[in-house]
Image (cartoon, rainbow, N blue to C red; front, top):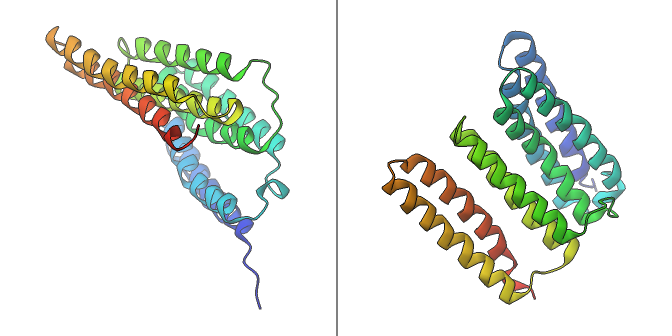
Length: 217
């Protein structure tokens, strides 16, 4: 009887992602876009291998995964800054770096000097900073990056700090959803509906991730 080897799925994804990245880097000038699509090709295969594996840490060692995510995402961010596409570089870096960080949060020992609550606060401040910068730059890209960072900060807090208390979760959820509606209404009234939609959308995404903990604690 043949045995399923779910850990082989990432190898397939790696081959496909590498082939696309190599082609894009050679024949396209949009290197950040190429890297973004390559990551989106690779990670579903990796996720399949992790979910279907009885012990994913035996193959995907958390510390190595975290290091690989950092070593891949940091140069992408710096490259985006260097070519004047800071927000797009941040978006691609987050797409590349967030999944390894959250995998490590689930399966690895913490190497973060900050507490889970402090990390959440820093993540939400970064989210606000990205959204503010996006308002004067590339709103759609910045809002997407801010949503990823905010949702990742909430998920990290839940993984490292345990379930968020029901009262705190309710306040945060009401604040995010209510704040999203207020932001959209206020900016629409001032003639900036697109900015309002972006800000409201980011808050709704973060609120949704907060709500994911409703079944715990």
